[in-house]
Length: 314
Length: 306
Image 1 (cartoon, rainbow over the protein chains, first blue to last red):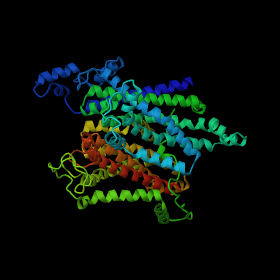
Image 2 (cartoon, each protein chain N blue to C red):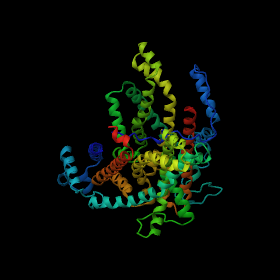
Image 3 (tube, rainbow over the protein chains, first blue to last red):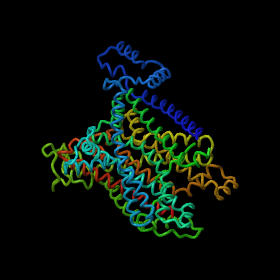
Image 4 (cartoon, helix red, strand yellow):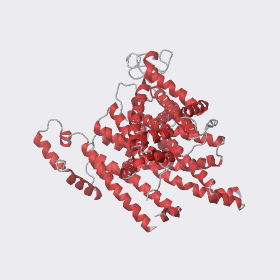
């Protein structure tokens, strides 16, 4: 187990270093002369080059990368070109806002999707299964902003129940629901499609397994077989899909936060990419990668704990 | 250690509509007979037909909209802006007095050009790479799989957003970025199909006959994995529509004054409280297109896997 952990950790670190190269390179080839962009068209050429020198953007790329990554590790993430504020506090604040939205969606939809996925599997091929599957299938295909805009038209405009733009909620539970429910529904619907499908597939696999047949044959009641033997094993693939969906969530948040004007991480990524705000873009992209890698790592470790075959396979 | 992440698209789904009649053919049926049987089974699949009819409507609309629109989609009428849906303007008018109904009909063209073009390019690259890596294995194969893993670390929208910020926003760039991201993903599916085919007897006998690798790949293996490729292509086309629309919505794709649906929704967002019809109808149009394509993909998967 220990060896397994170390190996996974090592792989994660290597991937992160590779991603940091990629992020740095992409940020570097963004068009635009940084000094010129910040000083404006009336600055002289010497002023621009002095400013570039001050920022360090005229040094060779490997030196710049090293400066950037060591500063990043020390917690010095630089100043935003666009907003002229320190990058780090803003990234963390936005991250927390997005986390509130993502966690709200995930917590509400997870039990529902797993539950309905299992129900669909137990009802395999019958009406309930078909209904759950076709609804899930259609929901996956719909872009988040289409669902979001339909929700806005019905619930904010026609019924007036929710605000047209969401802000960060206060601790008041009513306010949390009021601000977060509408933007999180598109996320929930897509997550429902994926997670319920995985839960269904996992349940079918374990229903058809030898251990389930043995449990039935030795006379255990159906209820006990399902709870003790089927459910436990059917949830394994679901863990993987949830961790993969965290990566999806980050992408979807870009869209949802733009649509609902919610001050989260996704909107920050979009704004800094469009505005060529390089320090901000590098920091946000690296955070996205770290979040994704860590959630994958946690899922793999969880799976290894729950399923000895994986960790012993090495 | 790599834990295979199951792709939800690969998990068999329940037969959603009434079961398509099985394809019963003699083992020596020719390719032509087989194609005919698949075609008939598709005609009997309710899921496929429902999706295909809606798809067909949008495709015809994308080609022939100039003949059916009641107004010029770009004609401004500043005296009648933000008008509610009425007899004169079925879906109302937008902030510049343009007819929303005409714009919805005209808006199908951009998404139905970008998505198929991107998918076709991705297929071209993906099939080539998938065939070669699956057939020869080796180093290229390993490298490809690492690239796929790394690509999956970022959501497609974020990769596209970064690339478009670098290259600039143009329709061509949207096509290219989707195609480039699709290539390794399609290659992975093709590779998997090739891996199982290459162990078959017909491949061994073709090799024994001394056929060169390229002939074995294109003449022997490719025709036998067409089913898998067709299903993959429809699934990818769905994602391409999804991504192209999302990029337009984010303002990174096609630019004004195009009647593109994603762009219309993005611009109409600001008028939500005074003219919700500006966003409602393009959103419904996009929803019907995407869902119909999904039905087609599901019907195909159901028939081709039986």
